Length: 108
Image (cartoon, rainbow, N blue to C red; front, side, top):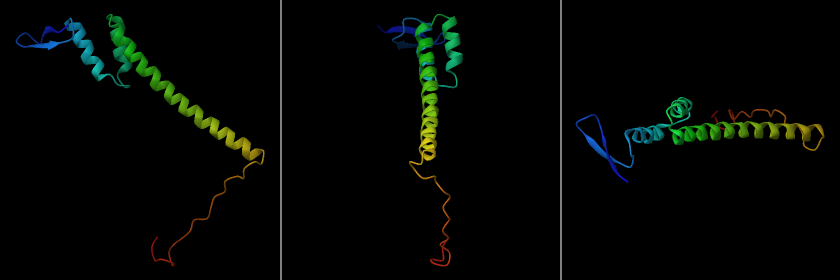
């Protein structure tokens, strides 16, 4: 249901919010990012804006766990590589000589 929300005394706007508090929650939800999610979640949970607090919590949880999964995957791949090298199943990577193209082409 669309309601009229006052915008500072002289102006008014139509919104889907039922109260000024809900309008503020909608605007905050549009601006939530990883750098401000913890602060917004804290204030939202203390003021009874449970949906906004859950939104911030999910954003922080998903981002943190996605980054953690990526780090774990890098370590797993590294450990598997080292085990395969140790068991002699693949040769160690060696530093290759850098080829100089000066003299042949005249360019670096």
